[in-house]
Structures are given as C-alpha cells and as structure tokens.
Length: 309
Length: 269
Image 1 (tube, chains in turn purple, blue):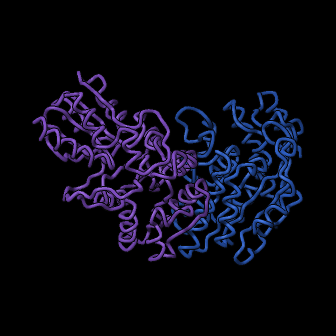
Image 2 (tube, rainbow over the protein chains, first blue to last red; image 1 turned 120 degrees about the horizontal axis):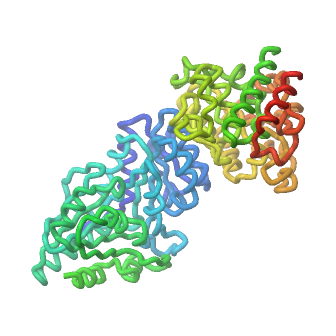
Image 3 (cartoon, rainbow over the protein chains, first blue to last red; image 1 turned 180 degrees about the horizontal axis):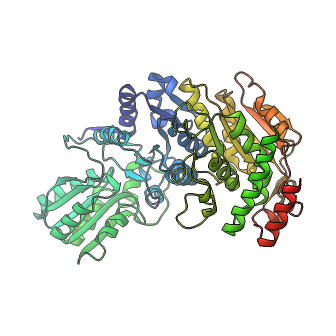
C-alpha cells in the first residue's frame, strides 16, 4: 500500500513555513479556506490572511493591488472558480502588468469527485497557458508541492499552481525542484511518458509493470512546470524514444499534451498519444471511479501505452 | 484656485489635441473627468516624480481607464515623461497605451480600463496599506456606467468589511454610457443610497466640473473605519458645446475643424 497524502494539505503546511520565512507573503481566499487549507496560514498569521468572501474576481484584483504594495499574495480557491470565473481579472489585472501574484488553486481535475462536473476544472491549464507572462506549475505529490510553493515565492511574476483535491501517492524522492526543469523519474528508451500532477504516479506504475510483463524500457518524465516547458528535455527524450505519450488529468486540448506537441512539431517523426480527458465534462462519482471512467487509471493507461509498443 | 482652473482648461485642450492626433479614443468621458483627476493629482494626493517609487506614496487608480488622456496629460505636466510623448497616444510602440498600462509608463499604478477592475485593485492597495500600517491615501475614479460591473460591488463590500477609511472611491456621474443614458441602459437607482447601504460615507458633489467643489469634497476628513464615496455630478464632454451630453461622442474624437472650434470655445470661457 502506497503512502498517500493530500497535495492541498501540503500546500497549507508549506504556506505556514513560507509565512514564517517571508513577512511579505500574504494569503487570500474566497471562503474556501477549509478546503484549500489556507486556514492553517490563517490560524498562524491572522494579520496576513484575508478572506475576501465568495468573490473570486475581487480576490484576484485585490491580490493585484496588494502586489503593487510589496506583498507576495498567494490567492486560493477552486481551480474552476479561479481560472474560470476570474479569468479576465487574472489576465488583465495580474498577468498583463506582470504583477507578482501566485494563483494557487485546488480541486483541479475529475478527481475532485462527488461534487461533479461543475466543480471539476479540466480546462484550467489551457486557460492559463495562453496568457503571456504566466508560469504554470503542477506538482506531482505532497513533497513536490512544498518545494513548488517555495520556488514560486522566489520567482517574480504571475504564477498558476495547480493542485489536486484527493489524497495521492507521496513519492520518496529527494529530487531537486527547479522551475522550468523537468524531472526524469525513470530512464527508458522504448517509449517516453511525459506526465504531470497525480498522473506521474500512474506513469511510473505503468512503466514498472510493462517492464515486468513485457520487458519494455519506458522513460517517465515529470513535467511539473508546464510553462515555461522544459523543451530541451522533451526533445531529448522524444528523439531517443520516438514514441511519445502524455498523461494529464486535464483536457487533451490545450494542456500538457498540447504543450509537448507544440515543442515537437516539425522536429522529427514521432508516434504521439495524448492521454487525458477527451473533450468531455466531468461528473459525480468517487475519485477512483472517475479516473477509471475517464481512462486515467492504471489499467486504462497501460492498455493505451501497450498499444503503442 | 484660478491657476488650477486654468490648468483644467489646458488639460482639456491638450486632451483634445492628443485625441485628434491619435484619431481614436474617448472624448466625452475624458472631458467630464478633468477636475476629478486634476484635483487629486495637484492637491489632494502627494504623487510626484520624486516619490513615485516610495512605498508610502499616495495611490491614484484610474478605474475608468478610457479617460487615460487626462491622466497622461497630468503626468507629463508633473514631469513623469516628456510632453512631446503625449502625441504618441495609442500609436504602435507608444508607452501611452489606449488604456493605462503600469508596466510601460511611469506613474501608472495598475493596468486598468477593463471596467470595474481598477476599483477592486485600489481596494487591494488600501487593504495592504492598512495591514502595513501606512498612512497613505488611495483614490480610485470610476465612471457611473462602470458601476454596472458586478466586481465593483464585490469591491465595495470588501472596502466596507475591511474598514478602509484610507480609500476614496470617486464616481464621475456624467449620466451617459456608450450605448445611451445610463438610466435607460441599466438603471442603477439612487447611487447615494446604494453606496450608503454598502457602508460608505457618501459625499455628493453637485458640480463635479467645478474644481472648488471637487477640492472641498477631497478635503473632507475621512470617517474613521468607513470608506468614502464621492458622487461627482459632471457633464460628459464638459467644456465643448457640441460634445457636451452627446452620447455619440463617447468614443469619438474631434477632426481638425472640430478641434479648432473646441479650442476656441475652451479658451474663451
């Protein structure tokens, strides 16, 4: 049984640590602090926590204003309400003037579960990716989330941190985290799996099982920074393996798969498969049921990858 | 006072010249806002080239960003950039964007003009100032049509909840928006009552194009723990008879002939 922990819990803990180190860090939430887990920061630093109420657009603008006063605002809500409802505030008030605001959204992807499709952001990476100046980070587990929070606090500019809701596997990893630099989780030569977020765990399991069952050598790359993407690494492994698969808990349109394809287009002859949500909305169910329904569980992923071999 | 009156006339002339040169922009809503912006920059607030990077400076956020030419004219006059640059307004590679862009031009505090956002950004500045225990003032200027944006009222609730007595929200109540009179497009009822019920200290300025009245409103001491809203009743297109109160002049600029007539009229009065 794998060790599991909620990525959003790690986010809450990381904020508290960051708050101790950096007095300019402020945290904003839109009445979801018990779900995004910014409540931990609120308890520790009430004077630097601002609950804006159920008003995401206002929260983004307020963060923009606060950033001009020397604060580093971390503002949190669910991915859909942050990137969707407050899209134009993020675009015009934060990214356009290149303000130093960290938009950290939980409840991304279908693994949100029972709340259903209205609450499952499957398009947030796409929405953020087309905005100039925006950095996008999708940590794969609780450990990486903590490193990511520190890294983005030290890097000026608008950033979108995409976090999952449900408990996910914690990797025992001591890998360094550098913004914009992909992590090679497993070397391989037959096929390369580029994954982000909770799909990195599935990619690793898939690679290990296909090694055992078919003796195949599969590389797994954790693209934790979707933008700017580590094009050098993507190109290197794609050229080496020739067979490329992307895995994401997001629409295959506009997300990691699209970002990798954009790097590879015109750069060689590759077999390419994008595993993700195939242009559908989410729905209610348990996270496990939903991941299976949308082809993101280990069995579905393995079947798709085997087809490529 | 006389000199500020004269300055307002000069600003109007310059704004119309800029708009004529750029061949696009917003005449009506620029002219209505001249006294409101000038009163803030020349008297009520301390914003200078010298203090423009000082964390403790006052902040002015032009939420109705389409009145940018007025702001540019004033910033140039205060020495933020060369006056010649005013005539690059809205042109390719200009620092004077159609709507204010803080990353291009010194003196601009935020990117505004997408209506409603500036007001809410100003609330963020005022909240930060309070939490940092800075005694600076934050002013933001909105159009009355702009009040139709929902985020304005989200911002107002937050301003009240966070007791932002360092925030002054000024509304340029000129009664017109792009498509017609505000009361026909989306009636907003009694604005004073609305802002009062949102927890604001409301000050009405009968003639928001009278610099004396504007300065008197700006000089009123804040009410402890309560944000202030100044409802300034103005005339859209103020100062030029054929532009005044004309819906069609919202997004229209004077041609050479009209510019000439406008300047004569402004300088005679």
